[in-house]
Length: 109
Picture 1: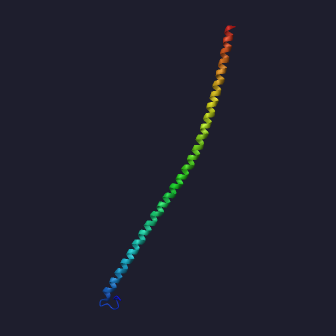
Picture 2 (picture 1 turned 30 degrees about the vertical axis):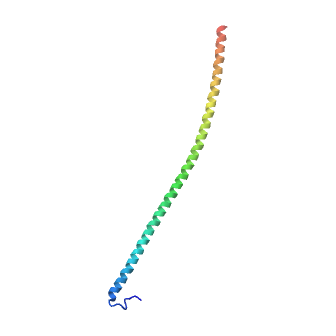
Picture 3 (picture 1 turned 180 degrees about the vertical axis):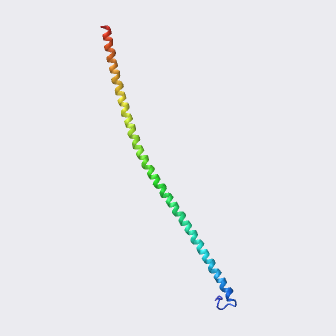
């Protein structure tokens, strides 16, 4: 069995040595706890950043979906306006042809 402070020739030195070992163990434990705390804080920070990114991505997808719906409505509206322009051009051409016929009949009469 090892020597203790009670059966040592220099109990004060032995107690000081044991106290030094205990202090070293405590310092080591505190350092490990601090490192674990920093690691946990870093992990939490990364989780928050990932959550924030996921929320922003989801929001952007929602906006993109809405913009896609707006674009589809706009394309359909433009197509209907183009059809209306074609119809009006046809009507205008028919009207102009009728006016030209009336003028030519009036000129020959």
